[in-house]
Image 1 (cartoon, rainbow, N blue to C red):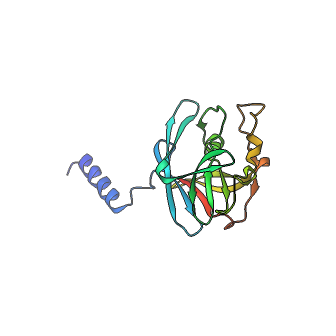
Image 2 (image 1 turned 90 degrees about the vertical axis):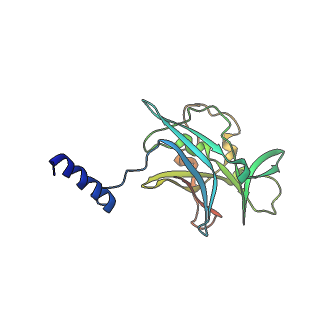
Image 3 (image 1 turned 45 degrees about the vertical axis):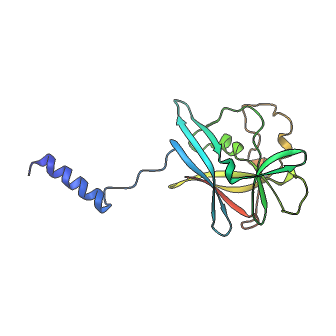
Length: 187
């Protein structure tokens, strides 16, 4: 057998046997699934995020699947919500932003995925019950753990619209298991 054919055959054999090296790392490219994970391990698919790499940053577009949400009219405003032991409602970030991410910096994507929670019996929306999913990259995608934020903080435009308003100081840890939705996953 010729050397190049032997190399090709060995490469194919290695791929088939799963010993061709590490799997491709997850990247911020293309359309990825967006889901919520409940504390009992159930995944609720709620839409997609499309990533388009650019020279300085990667642009993103979040597309929610409206069929996965129920309409709630809370505090004189319509919200798209998922129901379970809690009601969790998406709160669109209301101001212009670049819609970009960079390696290790997912702040604008996190701001596009703000939620609030309420008990099913509660009347109205309490913006102080905001949820911010702090994203971390894993080998399978991005996983966000919920952190508490006061969404009243974005009732007025930020002084500097180029800076995401919910920095680390504006967020508080949530005890694991305290919320029905324990993670937001992009994969």
